[in-house]
Amino acid sequence: MAELRYPRPFGWGRGHAAGEFLESERWQILEEREGYLLLEAHLPPHVLNPAGQLFGGFTGAYIDYVALRTCWAGREDRRGGWLSTVTMQIHYLEPVLPPRVRLRSALVTQRRRTYLVETRIEDLDGRVLVHATTSLLEGTRGRPGGDGAGDLRSGDGGGAS
Image (cartoon, rainbow, N blue to C red):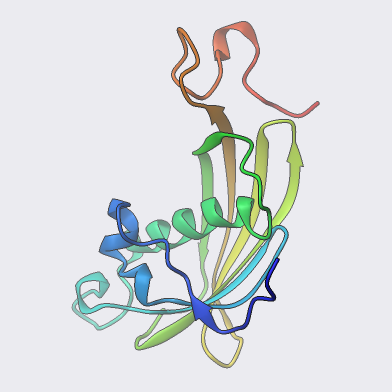
């Protein structure tokens, strides 16, 4: 495998509605290893509130999008599945201001098909502006009779084991 150089483009924006809305194709990966991402992202004008800050409702889109990618960070295999966000808790500590921020995200734990991810939005000086935790459930595509996230009625929902 070729050595990756940083920074490099995030490259996950086209074809995903959230990624296109957040213009993630313009983001840069500063560091990536298994279960960890450090990104630098811009804040496009359409995600700002009238005071010129990141609109609180769009903060979750950044957190969710980065948490999903963090689960696969540094891994060549994706186990053939996809991820669905189950819970997200966001703590707004300070206003998030343009033009650029850092998104630091780490996989806290994975048990069977459940992932817990911690994500921070920081200013370029490293001050934490937003802190969030997200739980995600890995599903499989094409499972007969299922919705892709496992049959929760049978207890096969991927919880902690």
